[in-house]
Amino acid sequence: MQPADKEFDELFRKYTDDTITPEEFRQWRVMLLDERNTARLESLLAALADTDHSAFGQEAPLPEMYAHIIQAIPSKATDKPPRRLIWWAAAASLLLLIGTGIFRWQQQAGKQQLAAKYDVAPGSSKAVLKLADGSVITLDSVAKRQIQLGNATAQQVNGQLNYAPSSNGEAAGINVLTTPRGGQFQVVLPDGTKVWLNAASSLSYPTAFTGRERLVEVSGEAYFEVAKDAHKPFRVKISKQESYIDVLGTHFNINAYPDEAAIRSTLLEGRIRFSAAQAVVLQPGQQAVLAAGTHTPEVVNGVDTSAVMAWRSGLFNFEGQHLREVMRQLARWYNIEVVYDQEVPDVVFGGKIVRNVSLTQLLKILTDAGIHFRLEPGGKLIIQPK
Image 1 (cartoon, helix red, strand yellow):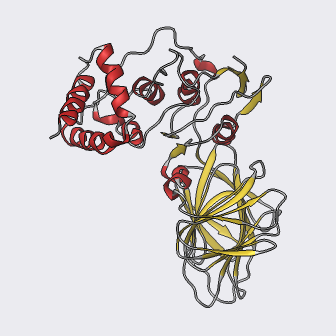
Image 2 (image 1 turned 30 degrees about the vertical axis):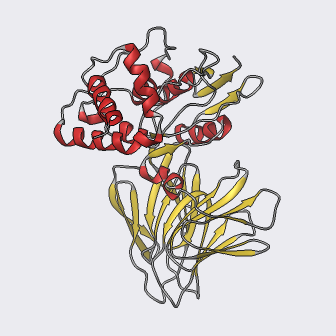
Image 3 (image 1 turned 90 degrees about the vertical axis):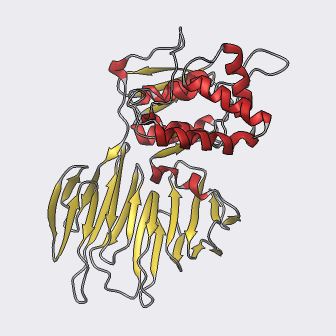
């Protein structure tokens, strides 16, 4: 073992048993931000997870834990923290190991407190299903029931809707599954295709795929795992756009929110063809980006698919995102209104955090990033100037 590794291990041990001094803690933070120590940290965390399964840290608010460990390091020229919220790859492990009892921290005195009565719970599994006859069914995360849809049937099991396989000759009606702000849902289509809908999204589809192709329409964000059928190609229309995705493979993600600056389709497995005025064929790890007002998609190589799919893994991924981008995600997931009082602070965020924390817990990260805000009744978040 190298001397630097021994020093890192010793500081890590002191941190976990709460004997680390302020000077040692500052030294350890510097070492944490060195990418050469990432694998070392992950190894130490894995070892602790195998040996310490106490419930000590289960009630620890994740953002406070995050802010305490990953504090911005003062620059050489000034004691003020930089405007970027510092992150490193292994921090996700820290956030996800909340139940191992390895975290010890004290809440910083004077930290901005948020009134609990204004708090907002995170999103959950919920959706609205509109049937071909115009009737509406509310879906939630707990119900277990069979739904009759004309000649078709579907089984709701918790946060998932499973359609029975269709047979030739069935009359097909169009169903529309819509998730509200603060909701997500999963559906298994009649052909076995699995679709996950993020918040504020919708999927329109027939109750039976009786034609020559399997055509669905999507708005917002959705992840598809398409069932293979060589005789009946699968096609996705992007709502209110003359853009289509022809599925030549299986697993892909579509982000087509109206308030985003571009439509993004990311391929994880197989092949897809993204068609606008021109078409591009994607290979795994590529992303097609169609910017607003343009007609030719741009192909981006080497995309971090785990970052794209963070929402499916129960995470927010803020890596490299500006404040407005982060706020759009929060607005959809927590069903809040975000208002900017004067100019928008120029802050770039980083890292990941789980999505099942309350809004006030997550917003405390903003305080540590130098953002000033207030949360008002009715879910209105006001971002304020310094």
